[in-house]
Structure formats: structure tokens, C-alpha cells
Length: 502
Image (cartoon, rainbow, N blue to C red; front, side, top):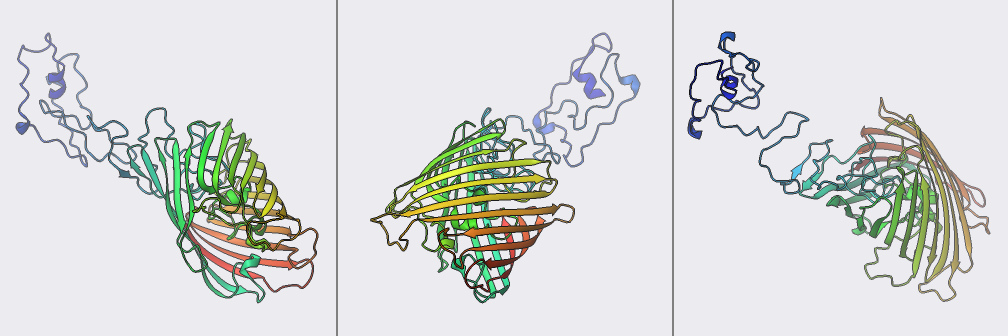
């Protein structure tokens, strides 16, 4: 009570006396340790002058006459530390957030907070998107730079250095194939050609956001080539200051197929659908602009990329070209997509790991590749529904490829080819036991003018156990492929996978 009385003297309530002179710093009473602060003992009630403050001072109050103490460097759990005289936001030293905790924002007032997420199949929209785990990924159903949002996992940590926020990109998929048919072939889209083990992906890199509205990402496949050589996976820079017009430039996802735009580690089953791997252009070098309105109730995408190169083998799909030598053989491809999520944004994961209320996402896409070898038209439509742990996905893909009369590269195609693929998938995630069960049906016709073994349907059933959300999970799939014409092939397979996805 003495400390309070000295701080609030009442001339009419106590004898006139001089206030004690503040002692030098060397004679200051010790500051109570932060771990176990000691409260001063209250004096008898008679010592308090009339009108004085309550007898018990607040916890951690300084003793009478002591120099004001600097608050402890370590704050109570869940409470940010406030240091008088600290540097302004943006000048703080780097700090690593605890696992599972968001990094403290150092962006200036008015800037989008680090980790503002882009849409499902869309880029981040500063000030419009809900909080997400990754710092500035170009699409919440897109790049591996954006880990899952909406309670479905996120980066274990973020590094904040002034106005720069960084988070890791790590995707490791180790597979075991205990059974595979004798006619299985990797170039036909099968998971393996023989029993054994396979390192499907070993991807590493980082994503970040500068000043709240400049997202970027760089990552590479450490074993991307057939000989185990490394190759670039993505490298892009964005400008996401306005939700109605965000720009992305570099090697990144082509906004066409929802399943292709979803991260490679975000699927409910081990592999993306066969039709998507064969008919969606995936990552290319170019630029696109996108905008989002009314919480992604409406979104648009429009872009230009290097002309798409595809293999003569249908299931080998499109070549992911990093364009290290520029656009040497193909012209320009044009892409447009319209999408809607009228009931709220969808998370990145195809599964409903957040066990959310009803969410619906739909999109329609078109591209034209004015290639030096082929002119290709592509049309896509997709629908994804999440509700209470269940998900349903439907996708339609259509391609028409016309060979050039004077191709710029060797070409085995001699006539126009029209291809079509249909995908339907359902699944349910039981959050209490961290288990998901999923099934997918596909119908494929690589050439509508021919009837052969490539015309087929495939049924895949699988289960996934999520040790840590979608960050660490184990999966098991069984795939049955049935040829609709020609010779029936023995190409069924059982695949197991352990995945780490940061």
C-alpha cells in the first residue's frame, strides 16, 4: 500500500513530507523474476490514507522508488511480448514461430497479412481471402507453395524477417508396390512396372511473401528425371495487392483443371486421375491474371503461356517445360477459366479434412495452344463438394489436337485426334480416427476415331491415415483397369505411400 500511497499523495490525509528521492539505479530493488513474481505485502488498513487506491497492487508492480522495470522478454503462453522502446514493425529481427502457431506479422498497416490465402484453384487476394497457412501461394488449389488451409494442416513454422515471410516447400512421396500386373507400363499411366519401391517425388524449396502483397515461390524436384537428375518444379513472382486483379509470372500452374491445380500432395488418392495427367497442361512458363469477388463467389483467370508440348504417347501427357532456352519450338497458348464458390472458399485438399459445412466449387476452363508442332484446343469442367467430412469430385476433360503441316519438332501424329476423359470421385474422412476412405471411377477415350486397348475405364479404391493433418500421412490404393476394346491387359496394381507435405 505504501507504493500506491507514495504515487498518489493526499495533502489533507497525511503529514506533509517530501517524497523519497528516487535512488540511483545501482540501489534499485530487484525486479521480481517473471516466472514467479512476488507481490508486496499489504500494510495494515490504518496506513492507507483516505481516498487511496486498493491495498493490493497489480501483479508485477514495481516496489516504491524503483526504476520502472523492463517487462520480461518471455511473455506468458499465447500472449505477445511488449517491449517498451522496441523497433517499429518491419525492423524486428527474424523469429521462428512455434510449430502450429502463425508467425507474428510485421507487415505495415494496411498491407495484407502474411499467409493471406488464395482461392481454391485461385491466387491469393490481398484483403479478400481468409487466413491460410502459406505465405502467398498462387492458388489454394494450386501450387505446392500453399499448404492446406481451413483446419486441414499448414506449415510447421514460418520465418519472419522484417517485411519478408518465408515458409518451406517439402514434398516427399516414398512408394512401395507389393503387387502389379505383368502388362503394367509407366508410359501407359500405371504406377509401376514391377514389384518394389519407388521415390515418386522429392521436392524442396520455399515460398514467401514480401511487404504483404508480393508472393513468390521456388522449388525443384531432386529426382525429377528418369536418371534421377534434378529439375525445376516452379519459380514464380506475383503481385497480389488488389483482389480483383492479381498477376503471376514465371513457371507455375496453368489455371485449367481443378485436379491439376491442386498440389501433388493434396489428393485423396495417391495419384491424380489418369485423364488429368494425360489431358491437363499442368505447370508451364507464362503469366496470368486473376480476380476474386465477394469472397470467391466469382473468380476469373486469363493467361498466356509458351505453347504446350505433348508426347505422342497419350498417357505421358504434356511436357513441363521450364523454358531455360526460351520458347524455341512453340508459339503461345491462351488460357481462360471461370470459377465460383458461392457458399464460401474451399480449402486446398480434395478431401474434407476440416469436416466443414456445405461448400461447393465449380469451374469451366478453355485453352488454345498455337503450337509449332500441334494446335491444341482444350475444354474442362469440374465440380467439388465438401460437407461434414464427405467430398465428391466430378471432372470432364476434352482435347482436340491438330498436327501442323510443317512441324517444328519430330511428330508421330498424322491426323487430328479428339480425346475425352470423365472422372468421378467420392470419399469420407473420419476426423476422430484420422482415417479417410475414397473411391474414383474414370472413363477414357484417347481417340474417338479409334477403338483399341487405350479405350478403358479404371476403378481406384484407397484409404489414408493422417498422422498430422495432411502434412504426414500414409496411403494405400488398389487400381483395376479394364480395356474396353482389343486385348485385356494385366495391369492392376496395389500401391502404398508415405508422404511428408510441408
